[in-house]
Image (cartoon, rainbow, N blue to C red; front, side):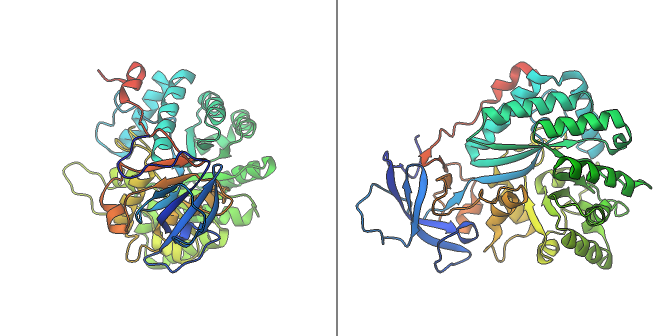
Length: 438
């Protein structure tokens, strides 16, 4: 593949020399770190990382690609996306950029257009984009209003097989939790999720019976061996704080599966004592928290003719300091919830550093799109660079953080099984038959 800064050797065994690695992503190798970055050579053999060694210390004369201190990352993990909604913007837009505008217009588009062929085409486009950017593990939420849940989960099951070995795909049922009382629907949803290897989700709200609804979901998940991933508190309304109830429900039910929560925006609107109390419960319950900084900057605190007053993100640093697993991800892509985006984890990371102040220092920042979300998704072997692991890597010409975060890194090389892939992004014209607004 043509590139601007490096040519990989065409050989079964070779050396990636003079690499700069995020230390938080490296296992089985120790070296002095500066700003969380370490220097190393990587020996790649038969598609795997044979060894990680100090630069210039390997005695054998191997074909070499000299990175000249360029960064090497593991492939990325996107733990919260919506590829069932993705890329509908040109046929169904958000007229005012608000959350309600997004909700209403996605509903209209779903009713008018979503069938297996439509969802499959847009999912494939999304996965081609994510793969070209360097993602290896992706979780998507699926709108699960009957009978859409059957269509979308069956398509995801197909896509999981189609993309096997390139992107590992997980899917979560996103449904209105009023329907936990509809025994026929809920039983069918749980059965569909279990059959297709998915997770349960939903959007907890401040109902008087929130605890009862949560218990129904937790019991169903426990009985069927399913993990849980909720959308929680995607609002600036400080009266909405379902996050605390989710933590209490996990503890109350003795639930042993993994529970992730996305957004958690209103936590940042609480008084200090309330925030501290909730964070302690989240830590005790072992919840995984994922912030979606780009989408929530777009949606939250949007009022016509008024400059937004807050960033829309959760208390990321406070949660991290309390020992909570914290990650970031893309969320929506070119749909009424977020008009932009391309499932590029580098963009997500770069913007998260700015929006969430993940710098000063940047030492461990790389974890939020690599090791932490990979572990949260039950795939701790992903998002790391380790001897014996696959040579699934992303190579950058950037040598230092200031270089990495100042440009989009469009010249990156994505390696899978030790070889560079074709990084050509899909053409938006591919979607014209189903999504063109012309």
